[in-house]
Length: 131
Image 1 (spheres, rainbow, N blue to C red):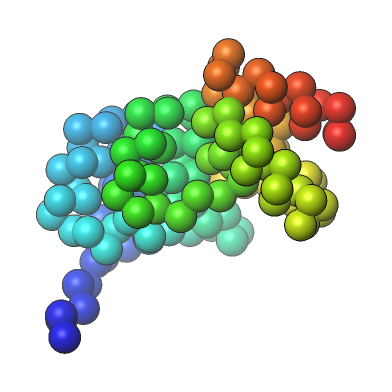
Image 2 (tube, rainbow, N blue to C red):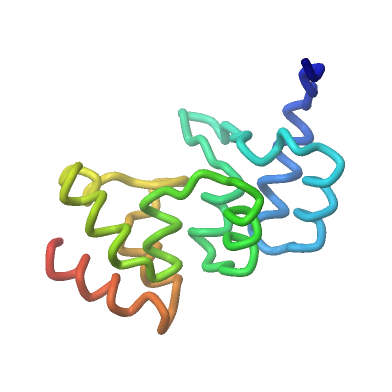
């Protein structure tokens, strides 16, 4: 049995901050502390954000794809930003209320799709019709 890795709140904050735009730092921190992959930081007021959530709401596909490749859990917000229309549709069929859910910092699902640019246009158009 492997010993549990201890990570600090400060390290989680640094990792989540890096995921907003610094792929190299994300890679470095994840190599040093693999447990960061599933960690979330509370910005206050129950505004929890993971590294995947951070990369998704700023449109950093490279960081999001790296985190997913390493085993991060896909969510509807990352799927929207990445242009994964079938994933978004499947979640909304199973959980229609997810359309109105907000991601980190209260950012909407539609805004996540907008951040994905041209690759996410089909997702954006689909969500706009439903909204």
